[in-house]
Length: 81
Image 1 (cartoon, helix red, strand yellow):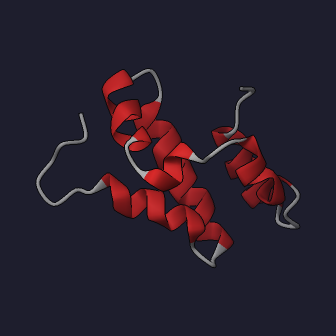
Image 2 (cartoon, rainbow, N blue to C red):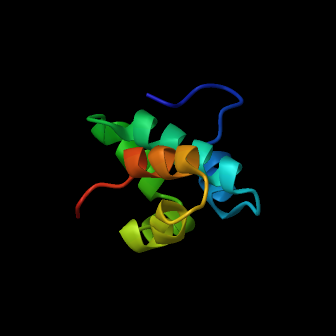
Image 3 (tube, rainbow, N blue to C red):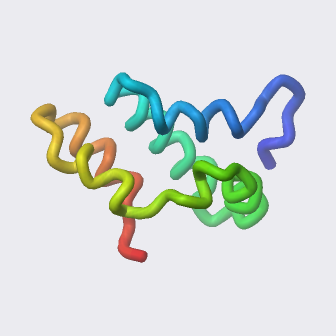
């Protein structure tokens, strides 16, 4: 569970909107990793307004990024919905 002193899921969710594409992809990968098969963490992430609006469309521009590494990191986060 992600309920650790000093850890705030809202910070990671907010980083999805950062201007730096690398920050966006790392934040998305962190959320994907934290939530994989852990329903309590999925609920913590879903509590944040920005996370509630996330869909595959949110990551579409990153899947077309010129940097192959950024595309790979993004593909890790996106699954069919």
